[in-house]
Length: 146
Length: 117
Image (cartoon, rainbow over all chains, first blue to last red; front, side, top):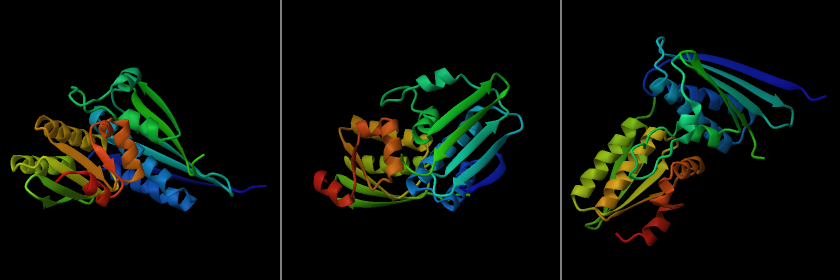
């Protein structure tokens, strides 16, 4: 039988400049404890940064808080994984519209790349969002490249 | 909260320069790089290498500002290149299309050999 260890961390962060770094550093510390590869940690950190920036810049939430939860799982010699939830209590957004944005040189929209970066850097991404019902991104990162 | 971005410049001849960054390239860091880059362009620099060896994190706002720098340099007929990117920053540049408009080199020596300063 293989022992499974689980670590959970919850943060409530104010929507202030550079707060995304606090979330990314916390996830990085947890990931190192679990033995994740450094490139996987860096990818996860960049995704977390973009998710927090999206919440801060676009959610319009009245409480101006970002709710972050990490669950790290390590199953013996198996591949460690971290589940990340990043939530806000804001206005929600249109996922299809956000996914369809494409930035190019000379284009009006140089911004709005966060979701593409998140989906490229994480292994699984699930978005729950509703008008005025807030947004939660659930993201999963595995510790070793498959 | 974060290490403030530090930028230093090494001039290469009359029309070239290498910009070194250290720290997080966010909106503030991106603007700092842009200010230095535009000063250099005003001084006649048309080949600019950005060495990011001491930058481990960028965000999409910072990269959007780097894209604006590339656009301005292209308008002036110049060239911008990057070197010493972490694998994740390199991947992020590719996602945002920046790699289509600027050369990316593994090492500074490779960039210096290729670019005409």
